Length: 168
Image 1: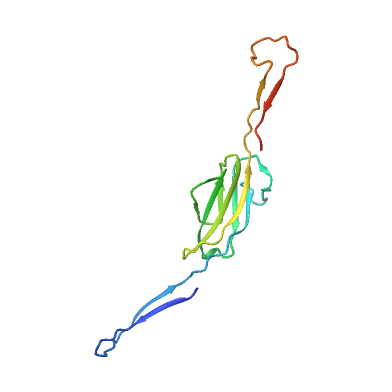
Image 2 (image 1 turned 120 degrees about the vertical axis):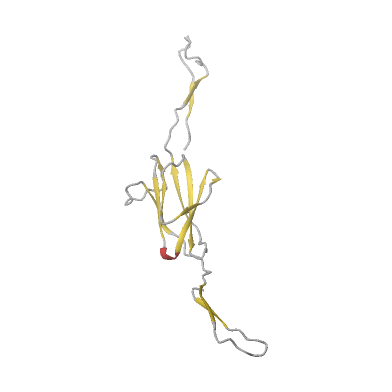
């Protein structure tokens, strides 16, 4: 593994004659070792890539950038990025380089897995990061069991009102 291999071929006839010329093929580059995983995954809010977001907290503004590092980027041809949201899986994304823009994430928890792929096609172990997005708030649903029609006048001075709000 990691070596260059060559093949040298000469032909021999049944009568024992050996060809004067030798065919040389190679080098053949053999690599069966998977690349090291990506590391130091972080999520930033562009254009400021100096301050990592605290991914344990809910983020309430859209637009993110995910960044990672790799031990030897020269051996990597690309990265496969898997996305998961609300138990839904999306098609893998092919990313060249170590950065991915995430402009319009829907509310909820997103999980991203980065898998390095080397020039031989070996796939490394995944590295994962998640982000919790909450950009929208819904108006509460207000109802009254005693004063249901807002266009009507009521003699009851103690309305019963309840409301429901979205949960985070």
